[in-house]
Amino acid sequence: MPKFRHIVRTQDFKLDWLDRLFVQAAEAEAAIKDRRARATYRLDEWQMFELFYQPSTRTRTSFAAAMMRMGGQVIWTENAREFSSAAKGETPKDSIRSLDYADLIVVRHHEEGTVALMADQDVVPIVNAGDGPGQHPSQALLDLWTIKKERGCLEDLTIALMGDLKYGRTIHSLVYLLAKYEPKKLYFISSPDLALPDDIIAYLSRHGVSYELIDDVRLVAGEIDILYQTRVQKEYFKIAADYFRVASRQIIDNSIMRLLSDRARVMHPLPRVDEIDQEVDSDPRAAYFRQTRNGLFIRMALIRYVLGFWD
Ligand code: NCD
Image (cartoon, rainbow, N blue to C red; front, side):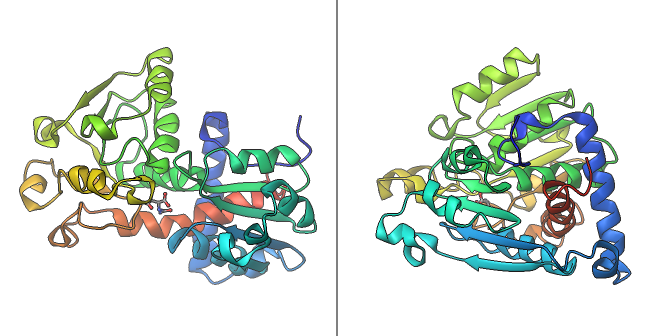
């Protein structure tokens, strides 16, 4: 049993814990709305470090905003590959051991598994903010809460995940969560080069989840409750020509939106390149900016969980 609470992979979360997280997130949302988050949560004596070895807009700032809105303090290094002692050859293990005076550390790293290794040190709570093409749990939790808010439930939904299913860490984390809610059907829409990793497919089969791999969203558009589009993760392609061959194969534009039902929602973890046409943004079914906003509240709840304020 680890001494500290770490958030590393989504397989570990239990349904009743997810319910409690959503209650905490809704309370955080209300506290922000009433401008009483600092007075309610009083984290003045708590300090969070952010160690980001890879670029980020939303994740880093929303973790920082979450902590600061609750009165806590934040210290960060962006581009830690260059600006931290990693550039001098320090191992991630040593970096974490030297930062053990933090109350929690939020880490984004370019290699899958490194954040787990840091958590294994168990010297300070670690939150995985993305580990290479591995996982991105806080994103998947905010995605799940967004689905619940937009659709009113999480069970019995038909959810299509498309784009880069191979390197997309938000997809990996989200699929494990969706599998817990007995979806009616999961569609995985990608070219064969960007298909979901075999171990995740095997997980779905083991857990009796109904899924299908297809290559064109138009085949199933009318059935879809949630369409989750993703960016092709250019940074993991060694050869540029390979990226350009598969990039933005299927774009969501108004011609696709016309095939979706009125109650369907389109989601995207962002950043978007061109895989959702900007003409879709004004459609009320485009939920991606609402989704991003939910990140602040989920991260407030997560920080407080990791610090031991709720179970
Ligand atoms: C995602 C990521 O970093 O994995 N972004 C995010 O955190 N919202 C998705 C992406 O970069 O495409």
